[in-house]
Length: 568
Ligand code: HC0
Image (cartoon, rainbow, N blue to C red; front, side, top):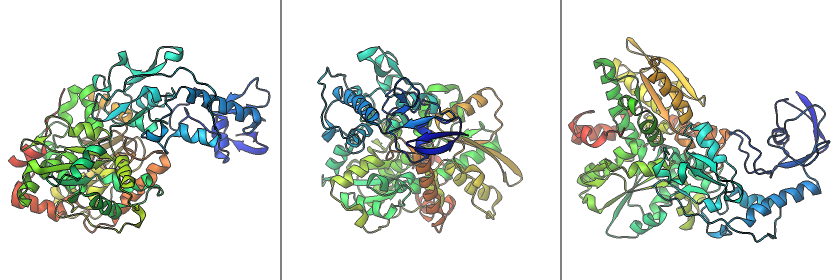
């Protein structure tokens, strides 16, 4: 530890801290833009400048190390003027379209300008003009809104190990771009949206599909059904002014009905169904000698990643479609048949925490009965915007139930939303199916948590199953390298592209910190504990589906509707 003084307050701080970390730990708020607590600091924007006694000029506190006896001042006329100047220069070169920007009222540049009391921009310089990159279904990039903080570059490289972006050109012409200025659809982008999750402005946002959804909702010829992903219910509240980790399932269902959806269903139902298919596939591979380790296939950012980076290992992926896609396939077949509505008149919408789900739904092979399984995917943020646009007082809404039968689910379905949840849900069902006996304890705590890669050995009948769970694509890469080198002795692996799993998805309300992730995860496990049924194979609606329509897991109909193939 070292002793330093910040604004007259003496503090003992770890000697490896930066001035910014030390100040924040003492509750001193220093504004920042390029700094992100989970990414390597870069000192690019200088908004976090402070005075350090003895230093020749103001210093960027995010990269300035503390040392014994240091005296720091964070609030002097020079500091305030310096910060204002930096932000003013950024604004001089920024489109002044805040009112119509997707990030209006949730933009870090806007709030810093507000906090610093900027009332005028004195410089009317040349503005940057770049074409939009809206070449893909998931993300839209507007470089004219980019402030060159580099957070997207670092998130993509350090966290995801994908390296899509870098700085190109020099001086005023500097931009952040994929190689050769190509669109995201032309490079190895997985559409995970972690770049959008850390972008402080509107330079990288999800493709907004709300207008299309409003249109079908007001079309009386259309029967519009919606499914909501497990992780949305513990984060939507944040988009509507509530604290992180609030469980808003019932209010969300009520809001969706008031927006005009004809049926409100739950992706948790098809998460249970996924366990039936994927669990059976795992048991088959284990007992009959299929490709092991088998790897989960429900996170579309992850599926894009393995297709792009490890095409030689695609056989390891489960062939099960993701719950979103299984759900969509059933809506256009089973549900259409049961309700007597032509699939051509049904619009299938899903609410997801994920930007890659938009690209997944658009895949050409994701069709059933000649119709796309899922027609529109909205992120949690987009649903939040629709609820506000409709003028609903979210907090005052009653708690309502999902519609049956595709809204019936178990605790195993909801934990899909947290890293380790798919594995735990699968283990609950696989262990009981193999042994034919009820598990004494259905909670598998060793696959839970936020450690990057977790391993466990789980007894299943007479055998021991070695499992691994990874979240973020950077951690996925480590496991893939082990498999490629032939040194991975796992039987079953769960991989989710985003930190924390879907609760930390690229379409979730920002800002997301480790604390926010933990609160959402706690809420997910609370949802599980509150359910009467907590194992997928006990879901009565799933049982009925198999008994009356689908046949058995891995049967002919399942194979056709619920399984898929991948593209090397
Ligand atoms: Fe997920 Fe899913 S759990 S990927 O994270 O498997 O997006 O929440 O909906 O499909 O169920 C996301 C979340 C889902 C799917 C489910 C899976």
